[in-house]
Each structure stands twice: as C-alpha cells, then as structure tokens.
Amino acid sequence: MNIIIYEDEGYKNFGPLTLTRPAYDLRCGINTLAEKIMRQYPKAKIDFSCRYYLPGKKVMKFEKGLFINGRILAPARLAREIPLKGRDEVFYSGDEIVAIRAVSRNFDQVRKRSKVKRTKIKVVKFPWDLLAENGGQIKEDKRYLRGKGKSKGKKDKTVVIYNPKDVIIDQGAVVEAGSVIDARTGPVYIGKGAIIKPLTYLKGPLSIGAMCRIGGEVSGSIFHGFSNKQHYGFIGSSYIGEWVNLGAGTTNSNLKNNYGSVRVVLEGKPVDSGHKFVGCFVADHVKTGIGTLITTGAVIGVGANIFGGGVTPKVVASFAWGDRQKYDLEKAIKAMKEIMRRRDKNFNPEQERLIRYLYKHPE
Image (cartoon, rainbow, N blue to C red):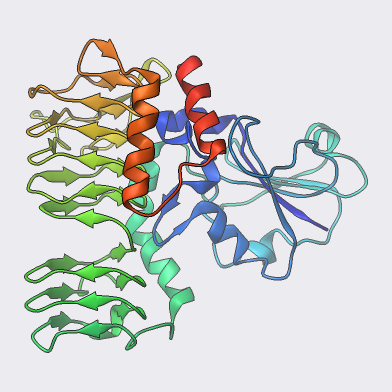
C-alpha cells in the first residue's frame, strides 16, 4: 500500500509561508514535516498531494492508500500506531484528521463512513506551533543522526564545547577559532557545509544547515535555506522563508510592552496565539532595507520589498514595494533570478510560473 502525504485546508492558517510550499514542507527542528513522516516508513513508496498550482509532481486523485496529514509531527511510534496494513480506518487527534487508511473504499468514502480511532499524535495548526515545538523537535531529530558525523567536521583547537556528547559537527562543516558551542540546554547540530565564523556563540537546542548567512542575534527562530541575515540586528521567535534578505539593522519585536498574548493576522482576522513570545512570519523572497523595524506578530508576504525605516504594519502584502505601492512583476522576477544566480541556483520555469500566479491571485 502506498503512502500519500497530503495537504488539507489547514495550510491556510500558515499565511504567506505556505503560498510557495505545501504545509508538509514547513520546517520544524532539523527536518521538514514530510521528512519526519517518511523516515518512519523507510520501505514504503511515498507520494504527495497538495494544491494544483504548486511546483512538483503530485497525486490529484484520492483513491486507495494510507493518507497521512502533512501537518503532523511524526513521532517514533507513528508506524506502530498507524501501520500500513489494516482495515478502512480514520485516525483523529482532537478535531484533526491525522491519517486515513483506504483499503476497500476510496479516501472520501472512508472519511465519511468508517470507524474512527483516536490518537495523541500532535498536529500543528498555526505557524507559532512550529516555533513552540522547534526545540523539542531538534532533540527528537538528533536521534536519527546518531553516529553521522560527530567527529567528521573540522573545528579549530580554540573552540570551546560544553556538553560535547550532544554536539554533532557533520562532515564538511567548519567551526573556526574562538567559537563557543553550548549544548547544556539542548543538542547542537552543525550540518554539512555549514561554516561557523570566529567568536560565534551557539546555544542549544540548535540546528544549522548550509547556505544561510546569519549574523547578529537570533533566538528561537527557524530559517529556510538561502536566506541572509548577515548584519547586526535581532530576530527572535520568528519564522523566515527562503531567499530572504534582511538588511543591516533589521530587528523584530517578539514581546509586547504589556507582556500580553500576541495576536497574529491570518486570513484577514486577528488570531490570539496564546503565547507571549511571538515574532514575525516572513515569506519567501522578502527584502528589508537597513534599519527596518518589524512589529510584534507581523506577517510579511511573498516578494515584499520593505524600506524607508520606521515600524512595519502588522500585515505587509505580497509584492509590496515600500509601504504603499506594488512591486513591478517583471522587476521582481528579474531580481529573484539575479539573487539565485549569485548562489549558483537557477530560477526555473516552474518557480517563475508560481510567482506569476501568486502576483495575479493575491492572498
């Protein structure tokens, strides 16, 4: 029986982060949500299903198979709790469908008519859930990296490591002189190709991959690949997409002055996160000018170009240019191509079609 990792309507709660990727490609810990599911079924054939306009091969007809909601945080017990073999069954966690096993009938028939089984598998519902679970997921994901590269990377003799048993420096990674790696509060994973420059302080739980350039102060945040925060400034409790460039001095607030719960605007409505520490959610290809100040709980759309100083509004639309105009589409695409070319990556036709689609169909 095939496994189909699918995206349901819950992707909408993740705002602009899921405009350019399926919900199961969101990152939490060292891996994406899909990667966490896949490693629990190592011998199964895996297919994917998501919105029609997103790039990549996908299943469009839901017939038979084991369908797994791509928003789950797959635990080590997943394959035991939801095995490939079995009868028609629907698995729920709270009010969320976790999986549907369709054996004798198709997906919709099973969903409507079959026996319900309850489980306690976590399902992320909002972007701040990814941040809240990130530290724990780094610890969980590290279990699957045991023995892979603990001593393969290079580190200068002056590097200080606290609790070295919880530090992995993978093959091809380099830690330069005077850096401190503190794994007393959680594991630190430095991935293949990562370079840690001199006098850097790294405190776990922490995962660092290749092709991001990070400087200044970063706390409790998730960065996707090829994003750049190379200069001074603070980014805290935030989720940053791919190909983002944060100009020098860009800083976000992740705590209200009254220490109250942070509200985030999703689908045009403010939603109470229930958390005191919530920063910003920045979609792919966003650029900020020097000295940009990002307000607490801000949501910034795909391809937005923010400049002029001052504090951003709570919501910045996709392809915004400054605070009032819209970025010219052809100029935006030209800039995206140039930025990717500088990292030896191609802006392929599928990616261009997606950007043109999003420009014409604003969220």
